[in-house]
Image (cartoon, rainbow, N blue to C red):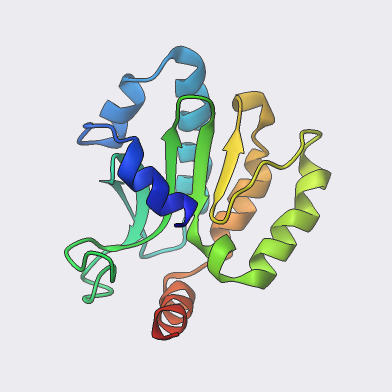
Length: 161
């Protein structure tokens, strides 16, 4: 089970908007998650939409651009990224670093240039203990690297396997 799917089954907020989600957080978590949200929105390629998805702030390709939706639940738009405040860390989920090996390699190579902290990463999840550990500029670069069309092509090639 991927990190993303594990989260979907275990920790969910009932917030209906990203602003409501942020308002539920402690001040330190609000700074970290809010900072991630800001850098994502600044670098998000055209076509992606910010939503509440699976109890997290999510970034998806809406049905207008990808009518089939997410194969696990076609009623849901196709996800790429999510951010969440977990019990022991802040989670940044990016399904592209799981599905695109060269993107993961790039990220792992760049990470030490942007952070003095050890990279804590699962299959699709990057975990941070606090705002001071988040390499915001690197996350912004990562976000900008996957366009809607590119993610659809990668996603379709992966689900066909």
